[in-house]
Amino acid sequence: MRTLLSADQANQAPPDTLGEYTERVLNYNVDARRKQLKRTQKSLMQPMGVTSEGAVSQRLKGITHWSLISAVNVAQSLDTSIEKLLDDSAMKMEIERQAVALRVQLDQINQMTGNKKATGDTPVASGELLRLGLNQRPSD
Image (cartoon, rainbow, N blue to C red):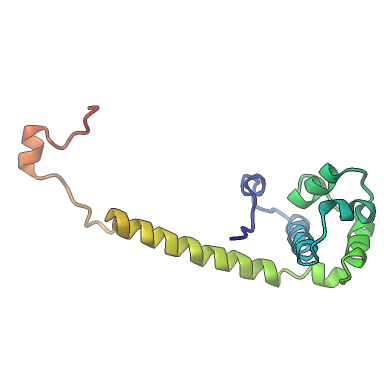
Protein backbone atom coordinates (compact mmCIF):
# COMPACT_ATOMS: atom_id res chain seq x y z
CA MET A 1 0.00 0.00 0.00
CA ARG A 2 1.46 3.33 -1.01
CA THR A 3 1.28 5.87 1.74
CA LEU A 4 0.95 9.53 1.09
CA LEU A 5 3.25 10.62 3.86
CA SER A 6 6.57 9.09 4.79
CA ALA A 7 7.55 8.94 8.45
CA ASP A 8 9.58 12.13 7.96
CA GLN A 9 6.67 13.95 6.36
CA ALA A 10 4.18 12.75 8.96
CA ASN A 11 6.29 14.36 11.68
CA GLN A 12 6.29 17.72 9.89
CA ALA A 13 3.85 20.38 10.94
CA PRO A 14 0.86 20.84 8.65
CA PRO A 15 1.42 23.45 5.95
CA ASP A 16 0.80 26.97 7.22
CA THR A 17 0.87 28.75 3.91
CA LEU A 18 -0.29 28.26 0.37
CA GLY A 19 3.37 28.01 -0.65
CA GLU A 20 4.03 25.13 1.75
CA TYR A 21 0.90 23.32 0.56
CA THR A 22 1.89 23.88 -3.07
CA GLU A 23 5.33 22.39 -2.41
CA ARG A 24 3.76 19.30 -0.84
CA VAL A 25 1.53 18.90 -3.89
CA LEU A 26 4.53 19.33 -6.18
CA ASN A 27 6.56 16.79 -4.19
CA TYR A 28 3.72 14.27 -4.28
CA ASN A 29 3.06 14.64 -8.01
CA VAL A 30 6.73 14.63 -9.03
CA ASP A 31 7.38 11.45 -7.05
CA ALA A 32 4.21 9.79 -8.38
CA ARG A 33 5.04 10.70 -11.99
CA ARG A 34 8.66 9.58 -11.55
CA LYS A 35 7.48 6.20 -10.27
CA GLN A 36 4.87 5.94 -13.03
CA LEU A 37 7.65 6.37 -15.60
CA LYS A 38 9.87 3.94 -13.63
CA ARG A 39 12.62 6.51 -13.29
CA THR A 40 15.10 6.85 -10.46
CA GLN A 41 15.66 9.86 -8.25
CA LYS A 42 19.06 10.12 -9.91
CA SER A 43 17.28 10.96 -13.19
CA LEU A 44 15.94 14.14 -11.54
CA MET A 45 19.33 15.49 -10.45
CA GLN A 46 20.09 17.47 -13.60
CA PRO A 47 16.59 18.98 -14.06
CA MET A 48 16.55 19.97 -10.38
CA GLY A 49 19.99 21.48 -10.66
CA VAL A 50 21.44 19.39 -7.83
CA THR A 51 24.50 17.17 -7.70
CA SER A 52 23.40 14.25 -5.51
CA GLU A 53 20.55 11.80 -5.11
CA GLY A 54 20.40 12.88 -1.47
CA ALA A 55 19.52 16.41 -2.58
CA VAL A 56 16.70 15.01 -4.74
CA SER A 57 15.43 12.99 -1.79
CA GLN A 58 15.54 16.04 0.48
CA ARG A 59 13.57 18.06 -2.06
CA LEU A 60 10.90 15.36 -2.43
CA LYS A 61 10.61 15.04 1.37
CA GLY A 62 10.10 18.80 1.69
CA ILE A 63 13.35 19.39 3.56
CA THR A 64 14.64 21.74 0.87
CA HIS A 65 12.56 24.02 -1.32
CA TRP A 66 11.82 24.25 -5.01
CA SER A 67 12.77 27.07 -7.31
CA LEU A 68 10.39 27.89 -10.13
CA ILE A 69 12.97 27.04 -12.79
CA SER A 70 13.73 23.63 -11.27
CA ALA A 71 10.00 22.81 -11.08
CA VAL A 72 9.57 23.72 -14.76
CA ASN A 73 12.68 21.71 -15.72
CA VAL A 74 11.46 18.66 -13.78
CA ALA A 75 8.03 18.90 -15.42
CA GLN A 76 9.69 18.89 -18.84
CA SER A 77 11.93 15.95 -17.93
CA LEU A 78 8.88 13.98 -16.75
CA ASP A 79 7.00 14.73 -19.99
CA THR A 80 4.25 16.63 -18.23
CA SER A 81 3.23 20.21 -17.56
CA ILE A 82 3.86 22.30 -14.48
CA GLU A 83 0.07 22.72 -14.24
CA LYS A 84 -0.38 18.96 -13.83
CA LEU A 85 2.37 18.82 -11.22
CA LEU A 86 0.59 21.58 -9.26
CA ASP A 87 -2.86 19.93 -9.45
CA ASP A 88 -3.77 18.70 -5.96
CA SER A 89 -6.67 16.42 -6.96
CA ALA A 90 -4.60 13.19 -7.00
CA MET A 91 -3.11 13.98 -3.60
CA LYS A 92 -6.55 14.75 -2.14
CA MET A 93 -7.91 11.46 -3.49
CA GLU A 94 -4.98 9.58 -1.95
CA ILE A 95 -5.53 11.27 1.41
CA GLU A 96 -9.21 10.29 1.33
CA ARG A 97 -8.34 6.72 0.32
CA GLN A 98 -5.91 6.45 3.23
CA ALA A 99 -8.44 7.94 5.65
CA VAL A 100 -11.04 5.35 4.62
CA ALA A 101 -8.49 2.54 4.96
CA LEU A 102 -7.54 3.76 8.44
CA ARG A 103 -11.19 3.93 9.49
CA VAL A 104 -11.72 0.35 8.29
CA GLN A 105 -8.62 -0.84 10.17
CA LEU A 106 -9.72 0.96 13.33
CA ASP A 107 -13.17 -0.62 13.10
CA GLN A 108 -11.58 -4.06 12.66
CA ILE A 109 -9.31 -3.53 15.66
CA ASN A 110 -12.24 -2.36 17.76
CA GLN A 111 -14.25 -5.43 16.74
CA MET A 112 -11.37 -7.81 17.53
CA THR A 113 -10.67 -6.28 20.92
CA GLY A 114 -14.28 -5.68 21.84
CA ASN A 115 -13.63 -1.97 22.26
CA LYS A 116 -16.57 0.31 21.90
CA LYS A 117 -16.62 3.95 21.04
CA ALA A 118 -16.52 6.28 24.01
CA THR A 119 -20.27 6.68 24.26
CA GLY A 120 -20.64 6.43 27.99
CA ASP A 121 -21.57 2.72 28.01
CA THR A 122 -18.07 1.63 29.03
CA PRO A 123 -18.24 -1.37 31.39
CA VAL A 124 -17.37 -0.64 35.02
CA ALA A 125 -16.17 -3.17 37.59
CA SER A 126 -18.95 -4.41 39.83
CA GLY A 127 -19.08 -3.48 43.51
CA GLU A 128 -18.09 -7.05 44.49
CA LEU A 129 -14.95 -6.91 42.31
CA LEU A 130 -14.06 -3.55 43.75
CA ARG A 131 -14.56 -4.85 47.32
CA LEU A 132 -12.28 -7.83 46.65
CA GLY A 133 -9.71 -5.69 44.85
CA LEU A 134 -10.02 -7.85 41.72
CA ASN A 135 -10.36 -4.89 39.42
CA GLN A 136 -6.69 -4.01 39.72
CA ARG A 137 -3.93 -4.79 37.28
CA PRO A 138 -1.35 -7.34 38.47
CA SER A 139 1.24 -4.56 38.86
CA ASP A 140 -0.97 -2.50 41.19
